[in-house]
Length: 195
Image 1 (cartoon, rainbow, N blue to C red):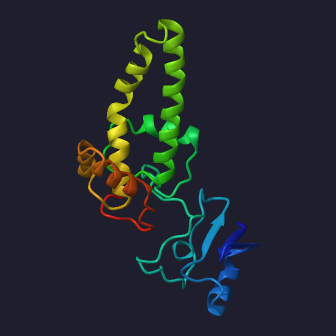
Image 2 (cartoon, rainbow, N blue to C red):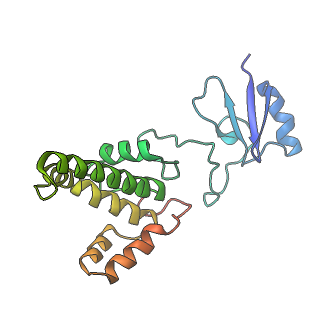
Image 3 (tube, one colour):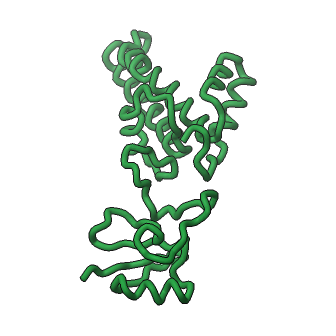
């Protein structure tokens, strides 16, 4: 018989058998915010999908971070990013202007890009001299220009702004300051019109 686990307020309980859920639902221990898991499930899922008597939560109630999106093709804009993850996501979503990218993916990519540009500048100086061509650095800029615009558009989508606001970057100083403030803003905690 399958053993089940459930989570309420971040506290995992189990194992129990599925029949024990009827009593827990009746006592109010298991409700619409409860996540359940058993070895046949890949991720924690809302109890209403598997337990009789549990009503689904209202649509405006955020899901728990322990629950991964059911659609594997959907990007999780709440995911944590680091240097390596931001680098992989940057090239994985090379020319994808739709969807969202969170602050971690955006700012860790900026750090990645700075470090790579610095390293390429050092190699250029070693190969061509300090007054020589910046061939490698220039190639890097060409390779990353389209995905940089795509990442900037997705970051703006994360705060529910159109990607077309990137055009503010053509207004010296004022446009850059506005974009910098927006890039630093906390994302929408709920899905928005961009994902």
